[in-house]
Length: 129
Image (cartoon, rainbow, N blue to C red):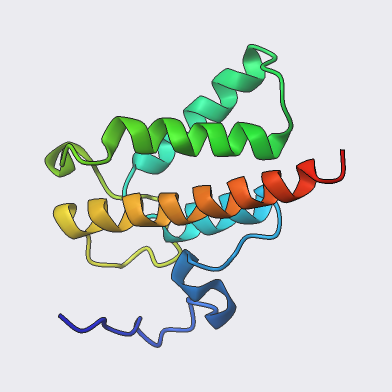
């Protein structure tokens, strides 16, 4: 099935690569996830970050974000609970057509991309310790 181009409505900056850009900071990663995740699995990331902050968990913001994404991916990857999720109300295009199953799969893939990028950054930063 060929990939379809995003609608040319001016909402999708090309540099974002539909959320699959390489994030340059934890805040940039969270911005991309907020804008391009299609499901409310995004709330799980936010909840886990806040829980870690409230508990004064050790680590920097990049560690907290990576841990939170890993937590959500571990909870939802491979179990196909797509009928239990809702649309992301923070999506960059409020009029996008929400489709449970493909949007669920998209978000798992997007979170895994960000997790790989964040872990690579964490590894690279560890070289400077």
